[in-house]
Length: 121
Image (cartoon, rainbow, N blue to C red; front, side):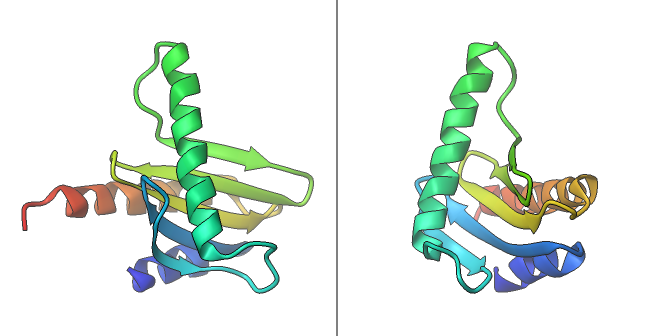
């Protein structure tokens, strides 16, 4: 899984970190920038909670299951992708990073991981 995280981080200029976590907030793999005010365990829990809350908001509108939840500030962006119902991919980036490219790579990775996680063992 570390290779998948590296692919996401290295795939778009301005992406500073990424992690894969279970839907209940446990770290599977992470590559985060130095100096964050919290560790990968805390970020994993926040990512899972963000996706769960966003799913509830989307459900209130009567829409299909959520795929992406994005938060942007003047300096940064955080995009959380659903990996089926079992996991999340979170991407941290500078505000100047190409959001469309992040979403394209994030969708590809999350769909591939969802298929892998759903495959019988």
